[in-house]
Length: 85
Image 1 (tube, rainbow, N blue to C red):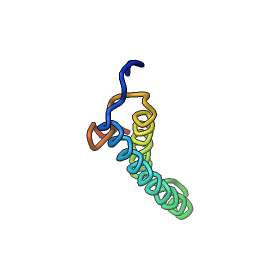
Image 2 (image 1 turned 90 degrees about the horizontal axis):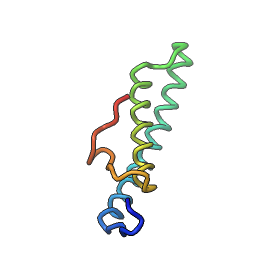
Image 3 (image 1 turned 120 degrees about the vertical axis):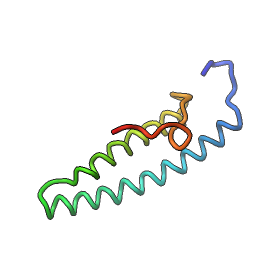
């Protein structure tokens, strides 16, 4: 983004939306972490499918932070693509 260009109100709406989605993502990570702990405690290894999901979820959270903090103009999912694990 150029320094002389003012952000639009549409970007503000997207920033609020993605911030709310980011809060929801943190709740999902919390429950995934609890699940992984219990699973690893029972089976002595973490669940591979959950590891793959949380890896892509962490990339998604990174994309949200980058957009909200003006580090990128690329919108995260559901506007953009879901990140690959």
